[in-house]
Length: 75
Image 1 (cartoon, one colour):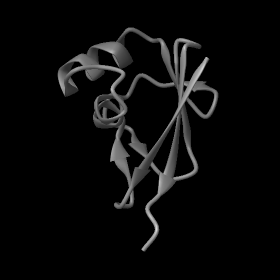
Image 2: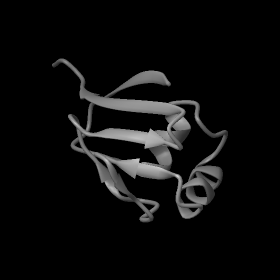
Image 3: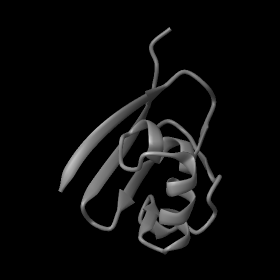
């Protein structure tokens, strides 16, 4: 499994945008479609909400292939 770390400098990032920033998909629309397909889980729970708020400390798994760990940007 490939592990990616994404640093954000806001309180949260919408799930579909996180998938785009991490390079898992090419666009936010593709991110929404991926989430709708049911292969994305957040902290071990399947997630179908395309714009779910992902905060630092959360982990997003994409079909057991990619794990995205979200961290807060250092100030």
